[in-house]
Image (cartoon, rainbow, N blue to C red; front, side, top):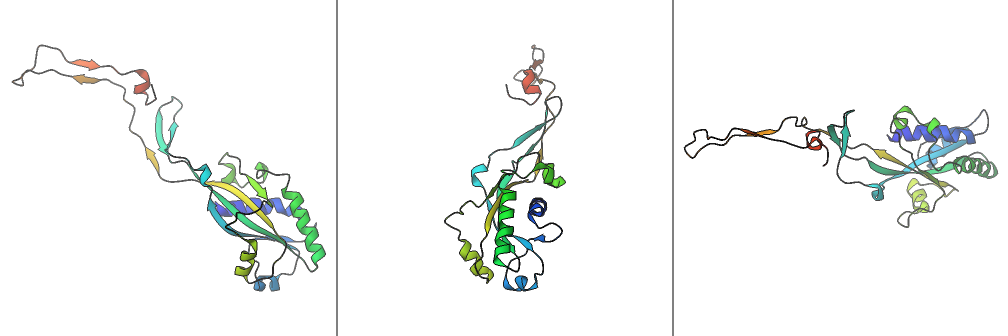
Length: 213
């Protein structure tokens, strides 16, 4: 799922690049990479992946057929926050600021990833995918620490966070619904059949369909 989010972000950021030039990449912006760069570039480095525990759900979803009968049960998805360090790279600081400003202007109007920019795998989820930009990171993270780990010099950057669901397997099949009542036969103490005829225990329609009364 992560590579589909990368592609959706790439499609969105291409609008910020100078016409006819530039690229969007996802490599670590360390010194070796910076030395090989030869065109205006927006670098979206995925530096952190964390579960959004506030979205975690318990239990399982019931998947029903057209007649309302429960066919299977599925665990709810787990939502994760993908954090990207977005930086601009050109030959002059002024041009980098201009490119970073264009990227900010491109992202700010979108509180969700645009549906028309989603790859098929993300579009098939049928859920909105939140996007935030330049929101202060949690106190447990420091952008300066990220640059220290990369071995590069601190540059102006935007923190871009996209929240996406990851499906959880497996899916549990359920037994067929009960369509007939149970039959109770009464026998005597010696094991011989009693005088009472077998009786059928009736169930309510909602119970036969596997639903809730």
